[in-house]
Structure formats: C-alpha cells, structure tokens
Image (cartoon, rainbow, N blue to C red; front, side, top):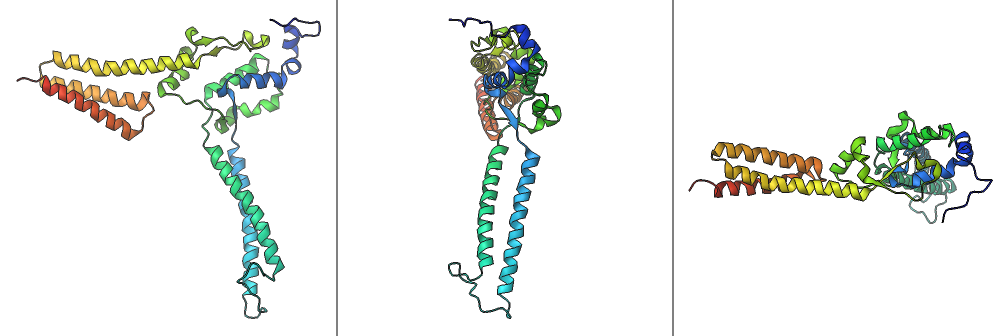
Length: 289
C-alpha cells in the first residue's frame, strides 16, 4: 500500500531546490547500498605508506636506544650487570624500552597485516565511478557537500577500490565496458525501493540475465569451435588446406580461452593441446585409405 502524502512531505520542486536537505547522506547511502559495485572507497595508499614509515621509524629509534644500553652495560668499565636475564634485569631503562617496543611493534605488525589485506582489493572500475558521479550530477552536485565528493575526483580514481567486487567472466567484463551493450532494455530490472526523486534518473540492470547471456555465448562459441572444423575438414581434400584450417582453429581456440574465460596460461595451453589432438585424430580418420 502506497504511503499517503502529507502537507509536510517535500514536493519535487522542494527536492530540486534543496537536495542537501531532503536527500543528503541518507539518500546517498541508500543509492550506494543499492548495488554492491557502488561501494567504493579510497585506499589512501600514499598515506598508509607514510604511516608505516612513521611506525617503522619510531621502532628504529627505540631499537637504537636499546642497543646503546646493551653496549653500555657490556663495557669492561661498567658494573657487573647480568645481561643474560629478562626476569631479573636490574636496568630499568632497558625494561621500559622493551615494553615500549612491544607495544609499538604490535601496532606495526597489525598495521602491516591490515595494509596487506587492503592492497588485495581491486581498483574500482571507471564506469562505476562515473555512475556515482552521474548521481551527484543529477542532483546538481548539492545532495552531498562538494568537498565530501572529492574522493571521486579524477586525480584520485586510481586510489579507489571496490569493497564488494563481483567475480565476472572476461566476456561479462567486455559487456560492462560497452555502455550500449550493458544498457540493453532486456537487461533492465525493477527496483521497488528506488525513491521517487531517482525514479527517472537511475536504471538498474539484472546481473543474472547478463551473466546467463555471457555463459550462453561462451557455450555457443565452444560448440561452433568443435563442430565447424569437423565439417570443413570433411569437405576439404587437400591435406595442406586441412592443416591450415586446423592451425587457424587452434589459434582461435587459444585466444578464446585466454581472453573470454578466466583460465590460467598453462590451463589454456593444456586445453588447446587436447583440442588440437582431437582435430588431428579426425584429420587422420578422414584421410585417404
């Protein structure tokens, strides 16, 4: 049942005039949450490196202080201090520095592990960044403070990462790169939660339909690659022409595996060798008696 509008509800004109009041971060957050691909954030790569260097330097200074204490306590002129014990260490400064190092190095290790995990995230696709920019543009770039949209600036694109990336076949990624292909009307899906102010501006497309099409295209290509050379080889009489056909189909098969499917190089070579062997067997069977 549709909600009943009240006199206190803003009109479309109100929203257009003051998007920062009626849309704001609530509307922006809902838009970002409407598709996993829109959840992009900055990696802060340079800042993370700088913090890591700072933590490293702090530990290095403490390490130098500890080494200096160890040298002083090991001098012949120093009093007889047991440098071979931790439990009964009489040098309070050394114990204090070790405790500082323990805390610092724990933070350092945690930071390195955290940074390693962040570095594994893929860079955000440009088309996704452009879609988010378009959302801001549709609302006059005033729904969210201009300075707080700065993370989407062109000079910071390389620093943006996809928090919830989608695992896609190369064929699907090829479709996504083409605005014409990815916006076919047959992919469009309804989004019941889309607010009125975005209803005419935002379109959503079904990942399931596009993935099914990509999978079907791969299967169809595979069937053609298996059947077409058999018929061509059967029709040809000249052995040289047959070898040329086999060479061409093997080359195309290898390109298809490498570019259209997520296969590793050795897997692609193994599958191509098997494919070539099948064609060669058919060549021998179809040869003159």
